[in-house]
Length: 339
Image (tube, rainbow, N blue to C red; front, side, top):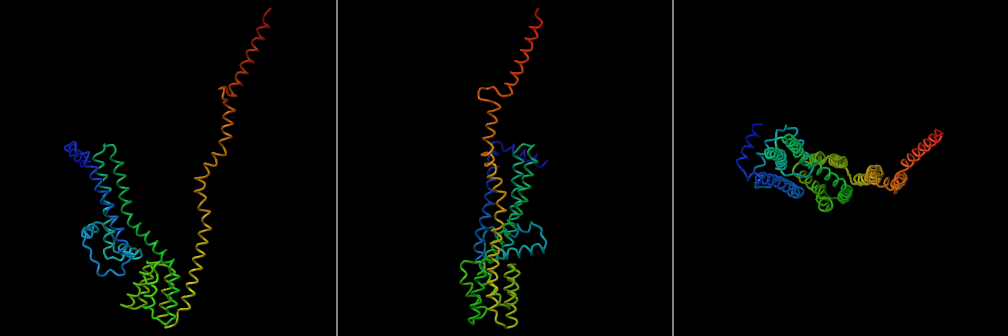
């Protein structure tokens, strides 16, 4: 509270300029946050096309300050390793990807707090609690936003790989049946997967890792990196064929047919779920309009019956009749009293 008091006294010294400083500071903070998000989004395309992280040199300002900003967030080694695996599964293979995301988390966490502090200084004292509460909620949401973004990118990438996997397995089976090696087959298949660049990138990484090390190790790394049951089955099949030296082309064709059948079953299941998911939107959107159309005529007729256009309602007429009857009884009583 003393800090807020000193800040308010400082703003009182600024006089007429304080109405310009706060909007300018908020504009700079929001613009800086949007610039950071835009730069991360732009680097996403380059990271998807990259097959290895070797040779990438970045000397922009954000890359220079990112390690210092990322170091401000305390995180355990296990959590950091898990997040790096998620980044690889989402297609971010740059060695600076984790540092950039941690730096973005720190900026998105600290910017709302700074803006809330400035707003609390500028606004009335009774609004301080709500302003700081809004800043705290925005800071928590900003710190979680990069992880949510990585999770969304990872799920989209897995869906893209799952969609193109049957065609890739068919082409791989034809290449292996034609007598080509596994490395040449992977190169040929990756070059033909224009409709699925994520799977082409993973197959290219698999081929290069197999050239440097061994194919079973590269297959195991691919299965852990992408984390798809369908791809784990393919990796296990290729590893068994490499270990035993057997022909796996027929097994690959059977697996591709099974994946297509599974995909059709999944589409049918989603189609069957659609009517259930549409119940609530239909109930909220169309039910009020239908009720208005069905009930409004009866309501209007009842209103006209209870309150006619001449201004005399049914209840008023009944009261008038009762009053007339009481007057008539009084008149008859008076007539009887007369001599």
